[in-house]
Structures are given as C-alpha cells and as structure tokens.
Amino acid sequence: MNIKQWYNSLAKREQNLINGASVVLLIGLVFQLIIGPINARAAKAELDVVNKAKLLAWVAENGSKYKAANRKVGGSGSSLSNIVNRSARQAGITISGTKPQGTELQIQLDNVEFNRLLKWLETLVEREQVRITMFDINADDKPGEVRVKRLQLAK
Image (tube, rainbow, N blue to C red; front, top):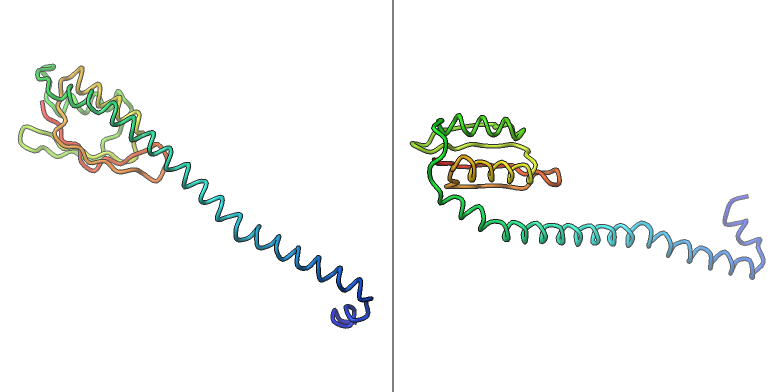
C-alpha cells in the first residue's frame, strides 16, 4: 500500500490531524534551515562590528602616544637595521622583508599579533628613538593578527 492509499484510508479527523502536523513541521523546518542561520550570521556580524569599534577606539586613544614618541631623536649607536632586527627578535616578531630607503628602512611583517606589534613599536620608539615615517597595515584572516605591508622607520 502506498502513502496516498494509506492517507485516503484514514478517517477525516485523522487526515486533518496529519495535515496540521505537516504544516507545523514545515514551519519548523523553515525556521531551522533559513531564519535560524540568518539570525546567527547577523548576531556574529554585529559582534564583529562591536569588537572592531573597540579596537578602533583603543588605537585612536593610544595613537597620539606613538605619534608624540616619533618626534624624539637620538638612540643607541647601532645601525637602524641592527636595532630593528635585534628588537624584533627579542619581541618574537619575524620580519618577512627589509629594504633600505636611503637613511630609512622599510620592513614587511606577515601574520603578527596586533598587541605584540604595538609593544614592539613602543620599544623601538621609546627605547631606541626610532621614528615611524610610514605605516601600512591590514587585518589578517586570524582574529587579533595583522599583516604589515609597509613599515618605514628612520633614526
């Protein structure tokens, strides 16, 4: 016996009960398969926006501190390249590329933790009196990590 024959063999009351249960099941599936994932993505996007706004506020708040430190001159007698390489190694940062630009040094960093980068830059600026003349940074795929396309430093 197929489903249609089975359904027609039921009493009218039982058919109405199956029809009602089918409608409830269909509505439940729509919510679970369509509306639920949309709401979850919207909540995640909202959380991402809040986190990025907090990060932006923190950078804006602390940016003036780094800009003021850029104006200092002096430092140790080592070359800029030696200072940068030594301090990066101490900070646990891997430099992916360096390029001398006259008296300045341009470096690239891949996949570096944002907070570690800021601490390293603070060390360079405050202890070594290195100035940041250009800074090009992008967010990485991993949360909390960035990619530095260009960081130009001067003594």
